[in-house]
Image 1 (tube, helix red, strand yellow):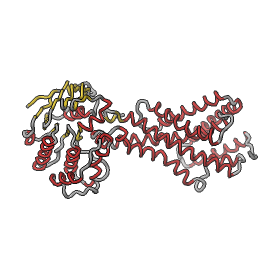
Image 2 (tube, chains in turn red, cyan; image 1 turned 90 degrees about the horizontal axis):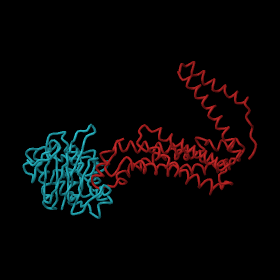
Image 3 (tube, one colour; image 1 turned 90 degrees about the vertical axis):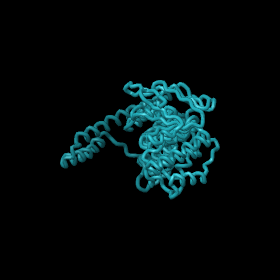
Image 4 (cartoon, chains in turn purple, cyan; image 1 turned 135 degrees about the horizontal axis):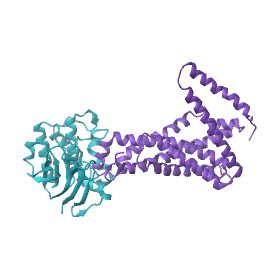
Length: 258
Length: 217
């Protein structure tokens, strides 16, 4: 690692000026979002501050149980958020989301931390926590987009699904088209990100590493690994969730209305 | 036993008993028409036979073999429902006629293009091309197409929910004759809900669904 300039509390206070500017714009233009903005900024400071303190503890203690517990906590919140974003819900949606998140993060994150990076010890929080965090954050999007698409499909194309079932289609066959659409929809964000990476946007992780003093080539290498990992976890995640959700939305007795 | 289904029980969400222990047994060739006032559960009965709703069904037997709930897809490939309003898949006419033959439960049945053409001609759909998009078809054309799809599929039991709706009497008559011919030639059992006095008289059996039970008329 190279050198980077440490930020002091005073520096943070200076940065607060920026949010004050945003607040003034809102006041002057009567946008009516001043309160929301202040609240959001306060939440941002509190949440990140708290996480910073917790992570400092976890990084300091390097205890596998602690690291894994933290990862599980992140997994749970990500899985719950994925179901909350969807307008429609069904019984067992949280369990499906948890199973999906577990499958996609274990495969993609496990491969990256244990096979590609080979972190030592295996649970090294410096690698596992940010890497799994990125998987959770992205799978969350993929899963909620995919779920939404699948449920829209079942609702909008119910007659076609029933027609297929009526001629003896298994539920997998009846939902094949919908599952394809769901996976495609869930994959679009990462495909877009990979396509414009470096041209339109400098990915956050790469930018962070560069500021932290890593060589640009190293930062780029990490970013490539991360993007491939996210693509894999989204593919696994959207496929799994459409399978699991599909089993609840269409049973042997036809479409179950939710 | 060729075909047996029942007893079938179904109550609506608010507790009204719609189907009160109905049992059906038929041997081919049979063309059975079900009539009755609307809202009495004719569609619900057909869907229950096909296993496409939450009705309680005592047993389902086809050609001496009983089917469990887990085997409903296979059951439906042989006790096939033509749903109300002639729904179609997005895509071409050909896809709409041939998709059942691509399903796992089709068990090697083949889509016969020549036969399809012949049936289309007989029902006045000779002008329709296989590659044509289904969205270009009128409601009446879609109904005839759905009927042809069912006959091409040729299951041992064909169930049709208002297959002739929206068709002028001469056309409805031709469709009815085609169904009867199918039941006699395959031979098979055809059960259809039909609202058409003129046609019902030509059926082998006419059953009336009222107050949760079926009566011979």
